[in-house]
Length: 331
Length: 137
Image: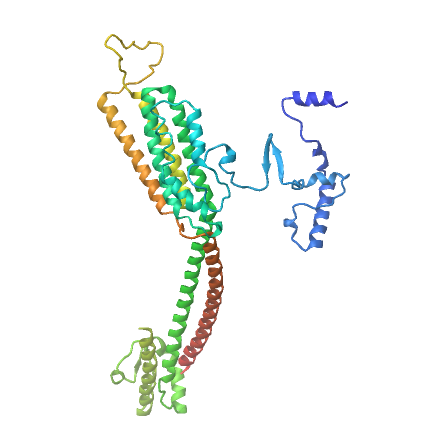
């Protein structure tokens, strides 16, 4: 208890002192810790960035301050006096001290006899004549009828949520009606309004609770939707790819079926020469007879004699046929 | 744009806010009545803010009407959202089943897609070669 005075002075100071372990963050310690981390990572075959905590550090060294503490073993801890838990779970309404209206959602194991709780509530709490008949409005007679199928069927995982619509709509209608009643009561006897306000509160909490219970279902539903979309997308892509490939193949086949006239060596030589100039202009088919030997596209070709003219004509015939087939395929 | 469940939750919260707003509107702007002819309404003291800010009856009525309409509209929104919640007919087992099926289908479709891409590439190369050879004539 020698530190009592120090503690007091620490408490009295305006700003709290830094945690005691701040001195452990020396450059040498940091480096040593980085090395240990590196070593641990290479031992376990994981990237260094993924190492959050190296277990089994020597307890007496300052190095243990350089990493976050381990998770609590029992999964619970206290923060500002509030118990916290590693497992995030939806607290059942009953344990929060709120009466449940309507049937429990399939999957949740809590069951409560709501009818009796409301009865006891309305008898124990003094109510005005105005409120008594309506305070049970959240529990209309049909609510017992939906409780029956919900509790009778055995396997919760195969249950559907088809009663949820009805239940939620009932709750929302009850909200409106209770608000109307609240206004009516407040206009007559403001002191009696608190109970109606409490009813409203219960209704709202129930509504939200039901929605929260529905969350996991919604999440799965959304996943299904996403996967379906992805599937459609993939299939569409496949189909588009196949279509293009098919089209290209047809073009190839069309080209293959074009009969290419036999070409003698002279003609082939001339053809190569003309090919560069004629390539672009040949895409517009020109009647073969209309062509003169001297002008090919935009380019003048020196032609001497009938034989050369004949070669020219045959070349363009070939070319025109080839491109004609291509045009037809891509049309 | 959040999912429908969140929209529904927000709508419910807004409904509650509207309740409160409506309540305060009426609380603030109602008129004063006397119980018997002998009662008088005490004039509010000058140094204190008046407890109620009485509006003319027609304005008050119109305000009430508007607030009531808003409440009904919100209620209808909520009910619409409720009826459009997805997948209420599916149980958890159904959902898991369809997730599994979709996963398999996705794998198959992905393989097919890759094949199709490969096929397309091959044809493309072929077409390219053919075009080049045509050009050479």
